[in-house]
Each structure stands twice: as structure tokens, then as C-alpha cells.
Length: 107
Length: 114
Image (cartoon, each protein chain N blue to C red):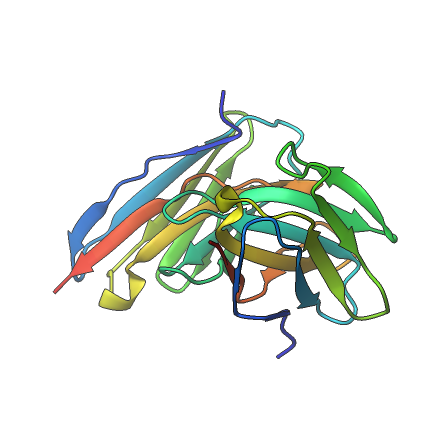
């Protein structure tokens, strides 16, 4: 089983749409969880941390289900500038990255 | 805002040559990482470094690779004899020692082996 699995997409959505990404991880001892955003040929940049209670940052909501080893990211009211690849990253001594989910937001 | 800086931004080298990629992590961070990303592929872990020693390395990080923290600020990745398949984007990252916090990435060095 891969350490981190994500639907690669691409997700093609119109501006204003709500889109959800899922991620499963295999290491049940993972300590912390993060969503990163990566633009083409750029470094990953932290989008938000993910807490068991769920957390929200503006249009972004992240959820963690430790029992199911599952992380989600919800983006509401998508903007053109949200177009990027979204990487979930559990931390267990090091950060594991999946292949990421590509989002294309169209006008 | 503190940031991780990497030099050079792009390096072209001939197969078989040695390269050194340089990174200056955020000053109060104590965990350091190198990752690489081959074009179109995922970000892959190479090595983690803590307390002046390697704490973990992947199977990619073979004898051709080494890391060093030669002074209090720099963190380097050396590839002794580059191969064509080493062509990739190499990212350095650092993390605070306080809890299980996020990593901050440098802008990367694009290595092209010809």
C-alpha cells in the first residue's frame, strides 16, 4: 500500500464551485497532518494544518479521521488562483507526500 | 518573514561530475530535509537531518549522496558522480523543533544532468 494516496485528478471546475479532495495514509503513527499547495515547477507551500476536530481557514476546510486514516480538504467558492496541485502530507519523522491532486479552476 | 533559501536556482552539469546544492534553513529550525521531484512526478523524500546527523534516508539516497551542515547556517547536498536520472528539482526544507510543526520549503534547485 502506498504511504499516501490521492486522486490525481485533474479536477476541472468553474469559478465559484465547491470542490473536495481526499487523501488516505498508511502510517497510523503519523503525528501531524498538513495540506500543501504546489504551483507548477514551484516549491510546496503550506496551505493549512489539519486537526482532528476539523479546522477552517476562510474558504478552506480540512478534516482528519484518524480511525479511517483519511484527510480531506474542501474548497468553497473556487477562484482562478486556486488552480494548483494539492498535496496532503502526514508527518511521521518526515513528511510523506502523495502524487497530489491537480485542480483547474475555469472562468 | 523568515524563509529557506537555496542556491543555485538552476545548475547544469555533465554526467559524472560532482554537484553541491546549498540551502540556508530558517535560523531557529533544527530539522532539515532534502526532497527531490522529477518533472511530472511526486515529491520524494531523500534524507532528514537532526542534531548534526542523518536521522533517516530513503533508498534513493545511496552512496553517491551526502549531506553536511558545515557551519551554523548552511545545509548542503552533494551528489558525487551525477547520472542523467539525477535530473530533477531538489527542495530543501526545515522545521522548527517545537512540536510536530509544518516544514518550510526553499524555492528549489533545478538540476539538469547532460
